[in-house]
Image 1 (cartoon, rainbow, N blue to C red):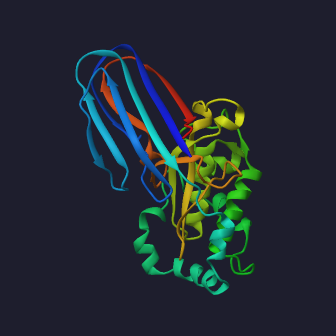
Image 2: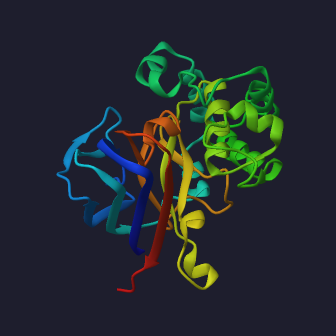
Length: 295
Protein backbone atom coordinates (compact mmCIF):
# COMPACT_ATOMS: atom_id res chain seq x y z
CA UNK A 1 0.00 0.00 0.00
CA UNK A 2 1.27 3.46 -0.91
CA UNK A 3 0.40 6.18 1.61
CA UNK A 4 0.86 9.93 1.61
CA UNK A 5 1.05 11.39 5.12
CA UNK A 6 0.80 15.03 6.19
CA UNK A 7 1.54 15.91 9.83
CA UNK A 8 1.24 19.51 11.05
CA UNK A 9 2.11 20.59 14.61
CA UNK A 10 1.42 24.20 15.56
CA UNK A 11 2.15 26.05 18.81
CA UNK A 12 0.62 29.45 19.53
CA UNK A 13 2.00 31.41 22.50
CA UNK A 14 0.18 33.95 24.65
CA UNK A 15 3.21 36.25 24.53
CA UNK A 16 6.31 36.39 22.32
CA UNK A 17 8.90 33.71 23.11
CA UNK A 18 12.52 33.14 22.13
CA UNK A 19 15.26 30.50 22.19
CA UNK A 20 12.93 27.66 21.22
CA UNK A 21 14.91 24.38 21.05
CA UNK A 22 13.13 21.34 19.64
CA UNK A 23 13.44 17.69 18.62
CA UNK A 24 11.11 15.90 16.22
CA UNK A 25 10.81 12.16 15.59
CA UNK A 26 8.59 12.12 12.53
CA UNK A 27 10.66 10.16 9.99
CA UNK A 28 9.28 6.67 9.19
CA UNK A 29 11.55 3.74 9.90
CA UNK A 30 12.92 1.68 7.02
CA UNK A 31 12.52 -2.04 7.59
CA UNK A 32 11.40 -5.22 5.84
CA UNK A 33 7.76 -4.07 5.99
CA UNK A 34 7.96 -0.43 4.90
CA UNK A 35 10.05 2.05 2.94
CA UNK A 36 9.96 5.84 3.05
CA UNK A 37 10.42 7.14 -0.50
CA UNK A 38 10.11 10.85 0.17
CA UNK A 39 9.95 13.21 3.13
CA UNK A 40 9.98 16.99 3.40
CA UNK A 41 10.06 19.05 6.61
CA UNK A 42 9.24 22.78 6.89
CA UNK A 43 9.73 24.95 9.98
CA UNK A 44 8.08 28.35 10.44
CA UNK A 45 9.83 30.64 11.43
CA UNK A 46 12.54 29.30 9.19
CA UNK A 47 15.21 27.23 10.98
CA UNK A 48 18.08 24.93 10.03
CA UNK A 49 17.58 21.22 10.69
CA UNK A 50 20.22 18.91 12.16
CA UNK A 51 19.71 15.17 11.81
CA UNK A 52 21.01 12.24 13.85
CA UNK A 53 20.02 8.79 15.12
CA UNK A 54 19.16 8.39 18.79
CA UNK A 55 20.16 5.47 21.03
CA UNK A 56 17.32 3.30 19.72
CA UNK A 57 18.08 3.97 16.05
CA UNK A 58 15.26 6.46 15.46
CA UNK A 59 15.87 9.34 13.06
CA UNK A 60 15.74 12.67 14.94
CA UNK A 61 15.71 16.21 13.55
CA UNK A 62 16.57 19.09 15.87
CA UNK A 63 16.34 22.85 15.37
CA UNK A 64 16.39 26.15 17.24
CA UNK A 65 14.43 29.37 16.72
CA UNK A 66 16.24 32.14 18.56
CA UNK A 67 14.30 35.18 17.33
CA UNK A 68 11.10 36.38 19.00
CA UNK A 69 7.98 34.61 17.72
CA UNK A 70 4.31 34.07 18.65
CA UNK A 71 3.76 30.94 16.58
CA UNK A 72 5.81 27.83 15.72
CA UNK A 73 4.70 25.47 12.94
CA UNK A 74 6.25 22.13 12.01
CA UNK A 75 5.04 20.53 8.76
CA UNK A 76 6.08 17.13 7.46
CA UNK A 77 5.03 15.47 4.23
CA UNK A 78 6.03 11.89 3.41
CA UNK A 79 5.29 9.02 1.07
CA UNK A 80 5.58 5.52 2.49
CA UNK A 81 5.10 2.13 0.82
CA UNK A 82 4.07 -0.68 3.14
CA UNK A 83 3.36 -4.38 2.88
CA UNK A 84 1.69 -6.94 5.11
CA UNK A 85 3.67 -8.72 7.79
CA UNK A 86 3.35 -12.50 8.30
CA UNK A 87 0.05 -13.38 9.94
CA UNK A 88 0.00 -14.87 13.46
CA UNK A 89 -0.83 -18.23 11.87
CA UNK A 90 2.16 -17.99 9.52
CA UNK A 91 4.43 -17.02 12.39
CA UNK A 92 3.14 -19.86 14.56
CA UNK A 93 3.82 -22.32 11.74
CA UNK A 94 7.53 -21.50 12.04
CA UNK A 95 7.60 -22.68 15.64
CA UNK A 96 7.38 -26.28 16.73
CA UNK A 97 6.49 -27.47 20.21
CA UNK A 98 10.07 -27.97 21.30
CA UNK A 99 11.08 -24.47 20.24
CA UNK A 100 8.06 -23.06 22.04
CA UNK A 101 9.14 -24.65 25.33
CA UNK A 102 12.78 -23.72 24.88
CA UNK A 103 11.83 -20.10 24.16
CA UNK A 104 10.49 -19.52 27.68
CA UNK A 105 13.65 -21.00 29.18
CA UNK A 106 15.90 -18.82 27.02
CA UNK A 107 14.08 -15.66 28.08
CA UNK A 108 15.11 -16.41 31.68
CA UNK A 109 18.83 -16.64 30.81
CA UNK A 110 21.52 -14.08 31.53
CA UNK A 111 22.17 -13.84 27.79
CA UNK A 112 18.62 -12.60 27.18
CA UNK A 113 18.77 -10.22 30.15
CA UNK A 114 21.99 -8.64 28.90
CA UNK A 115 20.93 -8.47 25.26
CA UNK A 116 17.58 -6.80 25.91
CA UNK A 117 18.17 -4.97 29.19
CA UNK A 118 16.61 -1.70 27.99
CA UNK A 119 13.37 -3.42 27.04
CA UNK A 120 13.09 -5.53 30.19
CA UNK A 121 13.51 -2.87 32.87
CA UNK A 122 10.50 -1.07 34.33
CA UNK A 123 9.98 2.58 33.42
CA UNK A 124 7.83 5.38 34.77
CA UNK A 125 4.98 4.34 32.48
CA UNK A 126 5.46 0.56 32.65
CA UNK A 127 5.97 -0.23 36.32
CA UNK A 128 5.17 -3.85 37.25
CA UNK A 129 2.92 -3.24 40.24
CA UNK A 130 1.07 -6.10 42.02
CA UNK A 131 -2.04 -5.18 40.01
CA UNK A 132 -0.17 -5.33 36.70
CA UNK A 133 1.52 -8.60 37.66
CA UNK A 134 -1.81 -10.13 38.64
CA UNK A 135 -3.32 -9.17 35.30
CA UNK A 136 -0.31 -10.57 33.42
CA UNK A 137 -0.58 -13.92 35.18
CA UNK A 138 -4.34 -14.08 34.60
CA UNK A 139 -3.80 -14.42 30.86
CA UNK A 140 -2.49 -17.99 30.89
CA UNK A 141 -0.11 -20.10 32.92
CA UNK A 142 2.79 -20.53 30.55
CA UNK A 143 3.88 -23.80 32.19
CA UNK A 144 0.57 -25.52 32.80
CA UNK A 145 -0.94 -24.57 29.44
CA UNK A 146 2.33 -25.19 27.56
CA UNK A 147 1.57 -22.07 25.53
CA UNK A 148 4.20 -20.58 23.23
CA UNK A 149 5.61 -17.10 23.74
CA UNK A 150 3.86 -16.01 20.54
CA UNK A 151 0.59 -17.56 21.69
CA UNK A 152 0.80 -15.89 25.09
CA UNK A 153 1.48 -12.49 23.52
CA UNK A 154 -1.48 -12.87 21.18
CA UNK A 155 -3.69 -13.82 24.14
CA UNK A 156 -2.43 -10.83 26.13
CA UNK A 157 -3.11 -8.39 23.30
CA UNK A 158 -6.60 -9.80 22.83
CA UNK A 159 -7.37 -9.69 26.56
CA UNK A 160 -6.45 -6.00 26.83
CA UNK A 161 -8.61 -5.23 23.79
CA UNK A 162 -11.60 -7.07 25.25
CA UNK A 163 -11.34 -6.14 28.92
CA UNK A 164 -10.57 -2.42 28.55
CA UNK A 165 -12.68 0.29 26.95
CA UNK A 166 -11.26 2.79 24.48
CA UNK A 167 -12.09 6.18 25.98
CA UNK A 168 -10.15 9.35 24.99
CA UNK A 169 -11.52 11.21 28.02
CA UNK A 170 -10.44 8.67 30.64
CA UNK A 171 -6.68 9.23 30.73
CA UNK A 172 -3.96 11.79 30.03
CA UNK A 173 -0.53 11.66 28.43
CA UNK A 174 0.92 10.96 31.90
CA UNK A 175 -1.26 7.92 32.71
CA UNK A 176 0.69 4.82 33.80
CA UNK A 177 -0.04 1.15 33.17
CA UNK A 178 -1.12 0.64 36.78
CA UNK A 179 -3.65 3.49 36.42
CA UNK A 180 -5.19 1.69 33.47
CA UNK A 181 -5.80 -1.41 35.56
CA UNK A 182 -7.88 0.67 37.97
CA UNK A 183 -9.79 2.74 35.41
CA UNK A 184 -10.45 -0.10 32.92
CA UNK A 185 -10.35 2.39 30.05
CA UNK A 186 -7.87 4.49 28.09
CA UNK A 187 -6.36 5.07 24.64
CA UNK A 188 -3.79 3.32 22.46
CA UNK A 189 -0.87 4.76 24.45
CA UNK A 190 -2.31 3.30 27.66
CA UNK A 191 -3.09 -0.08 26.09
CA UNK A 192 0.48 -0.28 24.75
CA UNK A 193 2.04 0.61 28.12
CA UNK A 194 -0.06 -2.03 29.89
CA UNK A 195 0.95 -4.73 27.40
CA UNK A 196 4.61 -3.76 27.71
CA UNK A 197 4.47 -3.91 31.52
CA UNK A 198 2.84 -7.37 31.37
CA UNK A 199 5.50 -8.58 28.94
CA UNK A 200 8.30 -7.40 31.21
CA UNK A 201 6.63 -9.17 34.15
CA UNK A 202 7.12 -12.38 32.14
CA UNK A 203 10.71 -11.52 31.09
CA UNK A 204 9.64 -10.85 27.50
CA UNK A 205 11.47 -7.88 25.93
CA UNK A 206 8.90 -5.34 24.72
CA UNK A 207 9.06 -1.86 23.23
CA UNK A 208 6.67 1.00 22.53
CA UNK A 209 6.01 1.86 18.87
CA UNK A 210 4.82 5.24 17.61
CA UNK A 211 3.34 5.68 14.16
CA UNK A 212 0.21 5.93 12.04
CA UNK A 213 -2.73 3.60 11.44
CA UNK A 214 -4.61 4.26 8.19
CA UNK A 215 -8.34 3.53 8.28
CA UNK A 216 -9.66 6.46 6.24
CA UNK A 217 -10.61 4.48 3.15
CA UNK A 218 -12.61 2.07 5.30
CA UNK A 219 -14.69 4.97 6.60
CA UNK A 220 -15.22 6.77 3.31
CA UNK A 221 -12.63 9.51 3.76
CA UNK A 222 -9.18 10.41 5.01
CA UNK A 223 -7.93 9.64 8.51
CA UNK A 224 -7.89 12.53 10.93
CA UNK A 225 -5.55 12.96 13.90
CA UNK A 226 -7.53 10.77 16.28
CA UNK A 227 -7.67 7.96 13.74
CA UNK A 228 -4.21 8.21 12.24
CA UNK A 229 -1.72 8.79 15.07
CA UNK A 230 -1.30 5.49 16.85
CA UNK A 231 0.79 3.42 19.25
CA UNK A 232 1.32 -0.33 19.45
CA UNK A 233 3.84 -2.87 20.76
CA UNK A 234 6.76 -4.93 19.49
CA UNK A 235 7.73 -7.93 21.61
CA UNK A 236 10.68 -10.25 21.11
CA UNK A 237 9.87 -13.88 20.30
CA UNK A 238 12.89 -16.23 20.28
CA UNK A 239 13.55 -17.68 16.79
CA UNK A 240 11.15 -15.13 15.23
CA UNK A 241 12.56 -11.80 16.39
CA UNK A 242 10.52 -8.64 17.02
CA UNK A 243 6.80 -9.24 16.41
CA UNK A 244 4.11 -6.54 16.33
CA UNK A 245 0.91 -6.52 18.36
CA UNK A 246 -1.87 -3.95 18.54
CA UNK A 247 -3.84 -4.27 21.80
CA UNK A 248 -6.24 -1.54 20.59
CA UNK A 249 -7.40 -2.98 17.24
CA UNK A 250 -8.26 -6.53 16.29
CA UNK A 251 -6.62 -6.58 12.84
CA UNK A 252 -2.96 -7.72 12.71
CA UNK A 253 -0.29 -5.05 12.30
CA UNK A 254 0.09 -4.98 8.52
CA UNK A 255 0.18 -2.67 5.54
CA UNK A 256 -2.11 -0.09 7.16
CA UNK A 257 0.50 0.65 9.84
CA UNK A 258 3.42 3.06 9.39
CA UNK A 259 6.11 2.91 12.06
CA UNK A 260 7.93 6.10 13.04
CA UNK A 261 10.14 4.62 15.74
CA UNK A 262 10.34 2.75 19.02
CA UNK A 263 11.59 3.13 22.59
CA UNK A 264 11.13 1.84 26.12
CA UNK A 265 7.89 3.80 26.48
CA UNK A 266 6.16 6.92 25.17
CA UNK A 267 8.75 9.27 26.65
CA UNK A 268 11.48 7.90 24.35
CA UNK A 269 9.53 8.47 21.16
CA UNK A 270 7.54 11.70 21.65
CA UNK A 271 6.92 13.00 18.09
CA UNK A 272 7.64 16.65 18.98
CA UNK A 273 9.21 18.04 22.14
CA UNK A 274 11.12 21.15 23.11
CA UNK A 275 11.65 24.08 25.44
CA UNK A 276 11.48 27.85 25.01
CA UNK A 277 12.18 31.06 26.89
CA UNK A 278 9.17 33.21 27.67
CA UNK A 279 6.19 33.89 29.92
CA UNK A 280 2.62 32.74 29.51
CA UNK A 281 1.02 29.61 28.19
CA UNK A 282 0.69 27.96 24.81
CA UNK A 283 -1.92 26.26 22.66
CA UNK A 284 -1.11 23.13 20.68
CA UNK A 285 -2.90 22.01 17.52
CA UNK A 286 -2.00 18.81 15.66
CA UNK A 287 -3.43 17.75 12.30
CA UNK A 288 -2.64 14.44 10.63
CA UNK A 289 -3.98 13.38 7.21
CA UNK A 290 -3.26 9.97 5.71
CA UNK A 291 -4.30 9.24 2.13
CA UNK A 292 -3.96 6.13 0.06
CA UNK A 293 -2.16 6.81 -3.24
CA UNK A 294 -3.37 4.81 -6.20
CA UNK A 295 -0.52 3.43 -8.32
